[in-house]
Amino acid sequence: MVTDFFIEAEDIIKIYSDNRTDVRIGALRSVELRIKKGTLVSIIGPSGAGKSTLLRLIGGLDTVSSGHLKVGDTLLSSPNISTGELTVYKKTIGFLWQFPDKNLLPKLTAEEQIEFPMHPYGYSRECRKRRVLELLTAVGLKDRATHQPSQLSGGEAQRLGIAIALANNPSLVLMDEPTGELDTKNTLMIINYLKELNEQFGTTMIVVTHDHRFARMTPLTYTIKNGQISAVDRIIEETHSSEDRLEREILSYVDKYGNVRIPDDLRQELGIHQLVRFTINRDDPKRPRLEIHPVND
Image (cartoon, rainbow, N blue to C red; front, side):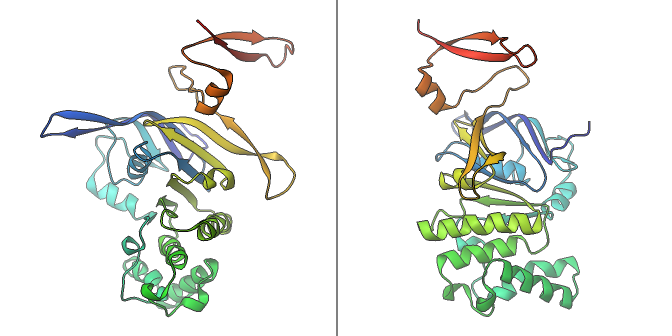
């Protein structure tokens, strides 16, 4: 089946087992996710919500317990996927972790850091140098080309990490809490750089974070709670007054069983507890509406 989605996750379940205690922990429960190619996406949730687990599954660093997970042409949920296939797949992905020491090598300069992962791919020296300059310029570090990590600020180090993740022109970049160690000023700077890089290179980017500032500044945001996607927040591109104040709407997935997860803030505002009543509003015969009404039993 041909779809418009680059990433498709359907009914994803991930269970971790502790062999010592025979305890099984459900990290993800029936996750639904569909992302188009070239999209900048944030997945936001508290610690333990399952966001890093989901990132690892998409990155091929872990395997699903059940469900359907496909990225591009790679069916990651296939029980028959080989180690070789996973190795090839992971070469198409750039990773950025929270702490700079996981992204940077301490003795290399900024330009050497970006060039280093390009060597196994057979790029000519001229091509590597051109790409390094392009990325240093794109993340605002052209004047830091010969600096080592110890000579960079926290924000500069993360911007360099982003450039490294983009070095081999990956189809997908995955970022785990990229602003977790940064102050507000540097956090907003990183978010803006990600938006600019996404537009410039057209790379699909997924950020998992607890930082709700991403929700207001990224085009598409998923909220994850207790191992489930509870809401989708996206820009309404057709109706906005300025680039800084885009109107947004909150959506929810309907899974293949017909289940709908009502976002927490809407449930609280409407006083929804256990029961709801559905009615069909046919005031406009061409566009009937399904209405949900709280039931106070």
